[in-house]
Length: 201
Ligand SMILES: CC(C)(COP(=O)(O)OP(=O)(O)OC[C@H]1O[C@@H](n2cnc3c(N)ncnc32)[C@H](O)[C@@H]1O)[C@@H](O)C(=O)NCCC(=O)NCCS
Ligand SMILES: Nc1ncnc2c1ncn2[C@@H]1O[C@H](COP(=O)(O)OP(=O)(O)OP(=O)(O)O)[C@@H](O)[C@H]1O
Image (cartoon, rainbow, N blue to C red):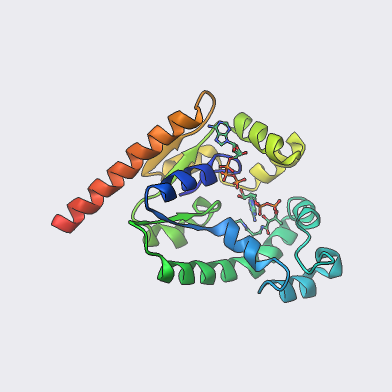
C-alpha cells in the first residue's frame, strides 16, 4: 500500500488491521530507528552532527525535515542511512507477522518500484487530490502549504502512483470516514477472494 503524504494510508491501515491483516508501517519503523538509542542514531550523529540530535538522543525531526526537503543531497544522505535499516526491519517484521495477509505501508513504494514490485502480490494506492493532501497535512501538522508542497515535489506524482496500482482506494474530497471504511471492506473482501482462488488452484 502506498500513497502520497497525507493521502490516508495510516487510516486505511487501521481499517485493514481491524479486519485481521498484519500491517508493517515503514514510517513507524523509521521513527523507531531514530528514537533515543535507535539503531540509526550513531550514523545520523556522525553524518549530520549533534544539531541533528535532540537532548534526549532522538533525531531532531523538525531540523532534519527542513534540511531534507531543502536540499536533495541531504535527503539522499539521510535515506542512505535509513533505507537499508528500514529494509532490514521490514524483513524482521515479515518473519513475525501472523495476520490473514500482510500489508506493507510504504510511502515511497512507487519511487522504488523496481525493488518492490517483484515482492508484492498487489499494489494498492490510497488516492487523494493534491489540494486535499496539502489541506489535511496542514491541519494535522501546522506546516505551511509551501512546506507540504516541497515534500510532495520530492515524491512520485499522483499519475505515476495510479499507473502502478492494482487496487485504488479513493480517499479524496467528499469521502467520509464511513465511506472510506466501506471501500476498504470491498478491497479486503477482494483480496480474501483472490487468496481463496489461489489456494483452490
Ligand atoms: C524527513 C523526516 C525527518 C521528517 O520527519 P516527520 O516526523 O516530519 O515526518 P514522518 O517521518 O512522519 O513522515 C511523513 C511523511 O513525509 C514523507 N517523507 C518522509 N521521508 C521522505 C523522503 N525521504 N522522501 C519523500 N517523502 C518523504 C512521507 O510521505 C511520509 O509519510 C523523516 O520523514 C525521515 O527521517 N525521512 C527519511 C526516511 C524516509 O525516507 N522515510 C519515508 C519512507 S519510510
Ligand atoms: N476521508 C478523510 N476525511 C477527512 N480527513 C481525513 C480523511 N482521511 C484521512 N484524514 C485525515 O488526514 C490526515 C492524513 O491521514 P493519514 O495519517 O491516514 O495519512 P497518511 O497517508 O498515513 O499520511 P503520512 O504519509 O503523512 O503519514 C490525518 O489527520 C487523518 O485523520
